[in-house]
Length: 102
Image (cartoon, rainbow, N blue to C red; front, side, top):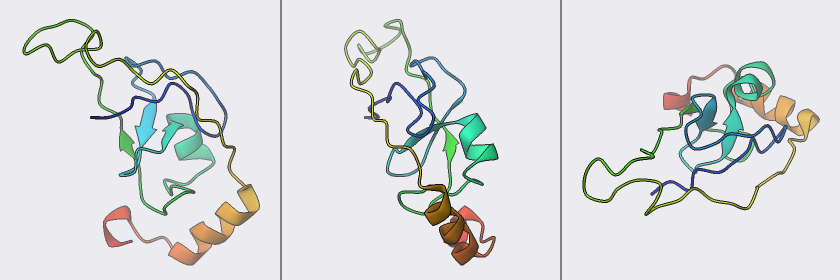
């Protein structure tokens, strides 16, 4: 299951489990919507993939004990700001390829 990382890896803005601003790649790298759209150009700096909205894990036990109480979000932050020059080279190398063609 997803770790539900608590903050943007680049700008460190808080992204609680219920946040609709969290974006993840297929490796679960986590960034805020502002960084994905404004800084990263929908290119993950760690793998080159695209981003999708992170699902929200239910806070309440609606069914099968699958909720935050049983499966809490990660508590340790994962903050590793993006090297913007290296990322610009990656974006240029991808030549505007959509995520599904990378």
